[in-house]
Length: 325
Image 1 (cartoon, rainbow, N blue to C red):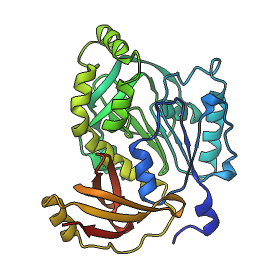
Image 2: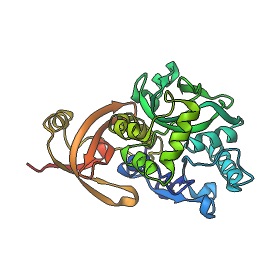
Image 3: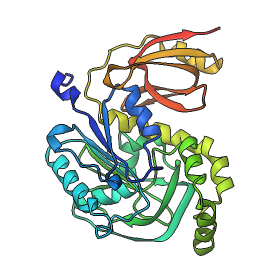
C-alpha cells in the first residue's frame, strides 16, 4: 500500500554542510523516483525544520568535524533532529560527516582515523553487508570514493556493513531504516571534479599524501581518471538509498520489457525517456542506457544523459521510452 496524500507532501530533508558538498547522485536517485526533497544549509544560518514537517533525513558530508560543536553551533541541533527522526521511525541516512553525526546521535563517538583516505579505494563488504538491500547491490569489494580523516565507532545495536584496510568501520545499519556511511556513495565524476577544482585543494591533497602516503591518498589526476569506473558502484548504492525513502506505490509494470531495455543497452541506442520527478514535475532526458541493475529495491536503468550525468531510474517509474533512430 502506498502512502497517503498528506504523507507524500512531506519532503525528505537534505542537510548540506558546505557549498560544494551537494547530494550529486543521491539527488538524481530521489528525483527519478518522484521523491519530494527540501534542502537546508545550516552553515548559512538556516533553521532546521520540525520533525513533523519532514518524512526522512539525509545528512551529507562537510569539512568540519562531528565534534566541532563549539565552532559550529548547529552540530547539536542536527544531532537532536536525527534522534527525533529515529524516534518518529523515519528513514535516516548519514554520509561521511553525516554518518559521524548520526553515530553520535545514536550513542557512539567519533575520533581521528588511523590514516586519511582520499580517493577511489575498495571497501570490504561484510557478510551482513552482502545481504543488505542497499549495500549488497555493490558486490563484495566495490571501489568507492573516500575523503575523510575522522571516523565513527559503531552505535549500540548497529550492524557493520563494510570496512576498508585503514578504516575498520565504513558503513553500518540500525534496524531497517537507519544507515551511516563513512565513504561517499553520492560521489560521481561531476562531484569529484567540482571538489578537485576548488582553489587550494590540489595543494591540500599533496600535503595529505606526504603525511599519510600514496596507499590511502590519491593525487588529483588519479582521482579524475578513476571516477568514471568508480562511480558505477555509487549508482548501485544510491539506487537503494533512493528506494529507502520511497513512499509511493509502484506502477506495477514497466513501459518496456527487460529484453527491450537489454537490446537498447547493447545497441547503444539513443533514447528519450520520460518520468515524473519530484513535486510531480515531468522530466525528459535524452541519452543512452549504460547498464541494467536488478537489486532488492527493484530493477533499474542506469541512464547517461547527453551531458554525461548518470541517473539510476527504476524501470517501473519510466512513463515512456522513445528510440530516436
